[in-house]
Length: 266
Image (cartoon, rainbow, N blue to C red; front, side, top):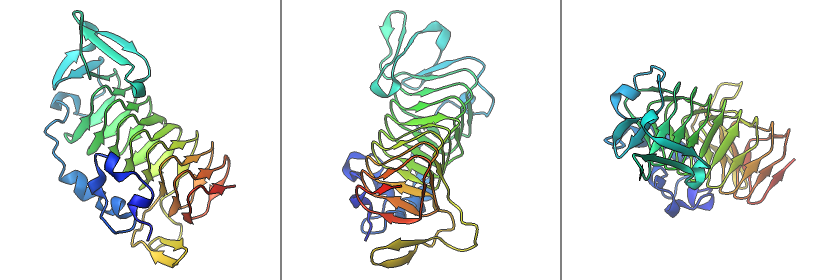
């Protein structure tokens, strides 16, 4: 059985309960909507920021307060390493998050953790949960039901819908992720596309060593275990599962099915 604990270090992930114990790893995708619909959004962003109107000026969020960024000193280092440093009147605002002018946030159920950065031109739709020290870059499009961990990157011109990022997962440039899961420390090369819908109608079936398993899902992209990576301009067919430390080489299309630990797909 390809359960979540064979792909991910679940105890290290704050949202591990999205997976069902003893069930196939794709249970996380089946459970994602109910998990996010029942999530506590009491720490969501202020309503004025989530109206869908592009932000007219950069805004700092600190301890639930909305602060005009022009009243602060902002040093933009490596966000993933805590390099976003914001101070006001000489006082360091530990854990402050920066939303840049031109960012668009739509819907009340959006939370963004401490020390994170949302660049101008990014669009985030509710519900979305974004962790600490995470970077949502210019042109990123989070289409809802996006569960993003700590120290992640949703990169330039990257589209994400109904997907899970474990901590330190990065999709830095021109990627598409639909109904997919990126394990901890995964990295997608520029232009990686995780296709999630077959041409032929019907649910997606996975070829495992034990035989063919029907996932019961019409849409199912890719699942990458911890420390897996893809090369530039690679594609995964619907229902691709890559084990820990697997590699999908550049300009390569991965066949659907299970690719075991350390696989190199050429």
